[in-house]
Length: 247
Image 1 (cartoon, rainbow, N blue to C red):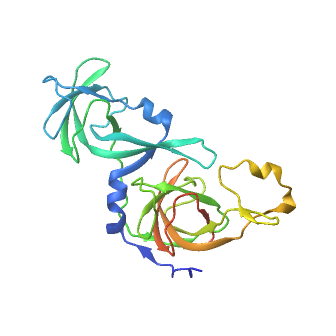
Image 2: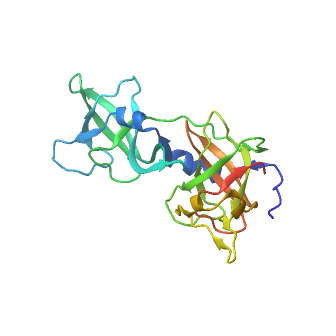
Image 3: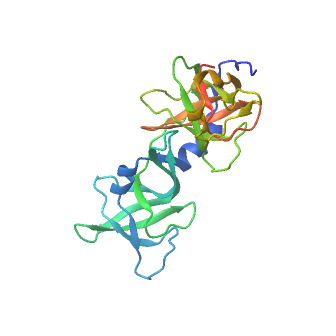
């Protein structure tokens, strides 16, 4: 099994790009954000220095991040957690066009913005290195790699099922994998994940395998219903669904 890593720090230079470029936004919150509409040239791609008409933001901030909706994240029960969003660029507010619309100027482009991209106030970050500490009673699961790759390994960033009410940045958790249940009989066989055959077997015939530690991760950014974590140790590739517990 993987031995616990010595508790230390995780440097900001490792994490900074993920703080700035990736977020999770709840479905209702995302729907309520103002969006880019179009420009006076009738184009559908906007870059730095372009003036664009948008819905009027509700608060008084003058600079906003442009974000784009990606994958819909769901927990292990299939319930929606929120959207994975990418930072597309930044805008500053110009003159209000009406009570509903606003002219904005694109001031920074990470990629081309387009109609339907949303505006969100720029987040403020504390760029101090993360001081690490072990988790205690929290139990969670890995949901997915934020890059949406099928395999997850060391130094990858993942979404986990624990939110800001349960965990905080710097918390270290162990990663545990459990093999499929075994249906005990004359010819033992593995239970398929999607199989309904377990309903035909009694509890005494269905054997749950123990969970073995296969790695560790550090939580570095929390949201309402999920968090981002950096995988610091991994004995094997993962696919999502692995359990999280004390390191």
